[in-house]
Length: 232
Ligand SMILES: C[S@@+](CC[C@H](N)C(=O)[O-])C[C@H]1O[C@@H](n2cnc3c(N)ncnc32)[C@H](O)[C@@H]1O
Image 1 (spheres, rainbow, N blue to C red):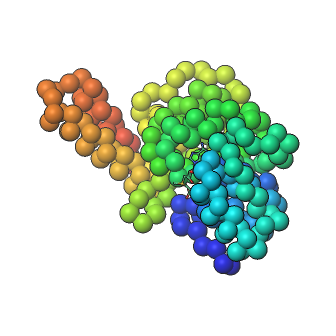
Image 2: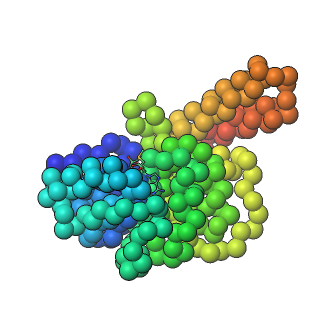
């Protein structure tokens, strides 16, 4: 194997269907599609990026790895410029390494097919993405965190179900998603989220008089920490 993935992308790769057709949106150097094609774990992969610079780097890497017949570069802003004849064959969509808000924005015009497996790895604002998925009829099949160097990332595996949404997610539900604190990386991720919120609340309290908003964030942080430490 020529290609090695960091733990974050390896965890995303592990969720891609064997023998499937992958669309990697925001591919940068096309590391993930090249890895899966080289390992014969996908039939075909589309490596999509909105920026010509990363796409040229992707093209060079695809050629260097001798994968030009099975990894196809596409210049597209999310789904917007993906040729319509490609989408029906796609089994898996990966959107990794971006903020949760941008991932939600990219997903807005995504094909509402129950057959497509979405693998989403937000670098920030995961709660925003979880709310988007919940409100737009996506169902989360699993969510797990991974530790990669100094960072903890969450990876959400979802499918569109079109089921009606019974109610909005609470703030706590949007923060913890489907993470299981019995899984050590997921617990670590939750504790880091709790610390991040606590720091934000402390910062707000220092810069202004105690506010209901700071108190709400601190309370949320305490609830996340208590959930992370819950014995199962
Ligand atoms: C930080 S890199 C992540 C690369 C890779 N997915 C990973 O997880 O390591 C984000 C990439 O997403 C691309 N990108 C940002 N917005 C995009 C959009 N709307 N459509 C396609 N690509 C996008 C950027 O050009 C950049 O190459």
